Image (cartoon, rainbow, N blue to C red; front, top):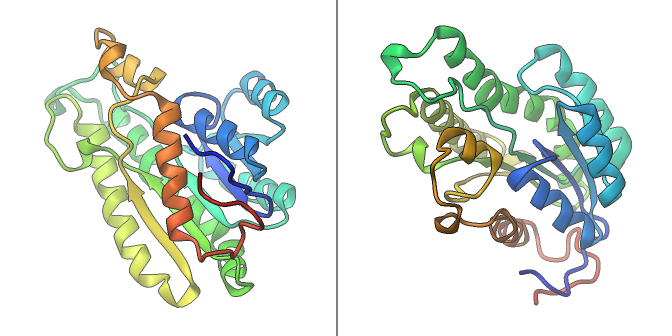
Length: 240
């Protein structure tokens, strides 16, 4: 677990911030002093987590095109800019999981709409704010949460795996293209976690065999520290 780190001055947006990995990220970043805005679909859950953490809660659906710009505007207005965007919100596609031949086209579209197109749209809408942060010496970083299903062909995970594979490649291309803007892009696989999404996919899985979201969040935050310029936005703090 991270200790003795001061994130004051760091402005972070997290999608899917009311459960699982997203919630763990919101809690840890806010506890370390970062200015955090998080997005989720359910107003009651957003309000509850905002009250608990002091983070800025935003109600929106990454799978809906017309929600994207209102989300982006609320992110930049609440934080006064943006240094780090973590695209964490995900859709499994069909539930229960289905073989591709049994997957409805609409379920594939849903997985792509959230996991790929939604992340693309939000990143594009916030690209200017991230580039501004980089120009001002604060560094800028986009983390897209991927999965080993993006690499390995697991039967039943076709919609999810295909969307995450596309997201990983999109991330690599954008990392090359955004170098002149000073924005880093990383696709990170947090591993199999004990989250509501995993339970929805594999309800019979033993939670004891799965990584806890708090640990995965701490590992991702370490990647944030590694990727941002030293001292650019971390005002005082040191690694513990």
